[in-house]
Length: 345
Image 1 (cartoon, rainbow, N blue to C red):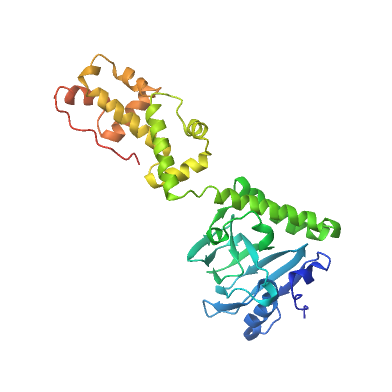
Image 2: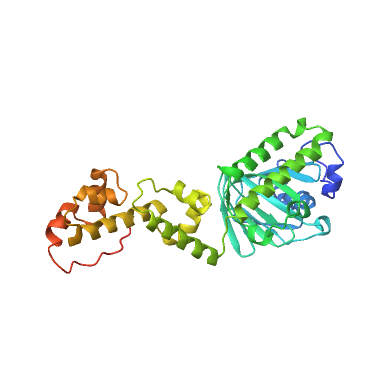
C-alpha cells in the first residue's frame, strides 16, 4: 500500500518534490470512500464524501510540494459531493485552495455563492471555512494550496473572492492557468534550491490574477456613476464616426472589459447602445421640419454613420420602416408620434 501522506505541508516540504500517487484501484469497493478520505484529509483537511448515485467510488490523486505550496492533480469518474468542514489542527494557519478544472464539471459552494466550473475555468476557496464541491459525473482538476498569509498579504478580501468563476482563457487568468499546469508537469525536474523561487512566482501570479478580478468589481454606487459618465460621453460624441469602445476606454481611463461590466445592467451592449441613440437622433431629424432641407444621407452622416446602405438597413430593422418612407409619410404631420426607445436586440 502507498504510505499515507505526511502530517502537514511543512513536513511535506522537507522531502524532494516527487509526486506521490494514491488510487482506489485495488482497494475493496466498500472501503474506497474511507480510503480516499483518510489519504486526502492530511493534505486538504477534514472532509466527508457523499456518493450521488449507487456506484462504486473511483478516483486517483497525485500530490507533492514546492516549498510551502501543495500541488495536486485529482481525477474522479464517480458522481459525488465532497464537504469540507473547515479548519483542523493540520490547517490551523489556513490555506487558500485554487482549483483549475481540466475536464468534466464541478460545482463549488462557499459563503452562500455557487461557482459552476467547466474546463478552462478556475476558482478559489478558503480551507478555514465550510464549503462543498460537487462532481455531477466526472472531473479532473489541478489544485494548489497556498498559505493564506502569503496570498492575502496585500489585503485582498478573500470573503468576496471565494466560489467565483474565473476564466483561464485570457489575461492574467490564462497566465496563471499556464503557470500552474506547466509547474505541475515539471515538478520532477525542479531542483530543491529552486523550490522557493518557483513558489514565490506562483503566489505572486495568483495574487495578481485575484487583484485583477477584485479591482474590476465596482460597488453599485460606483457603477451607477460611471455608467452615467459613459452615457454622457456617448451623447456628446455621437456624431463622431470614430466613437468606439476603445475610444471610450481611453476617455474614461478604464479597460474595455471593465466598461462592458459596468454596462451589463443596461441589458444592451455599448455598441448597440450607441447605434440605438444614433438611429433615434436620425429619426428625430427626419421628422423635424427644421431639417427638411437635409438629405437622408446628410442626416445619417451627421450622427456618425459612414455608410448609407448600412444606415438604411439598421433603421428599417429598428423601426420597421425605411428612412425615406418615414420622412415622406410621417413628417408632414405637425405632431409626429414620439420616438420610442427601442432595444436593438
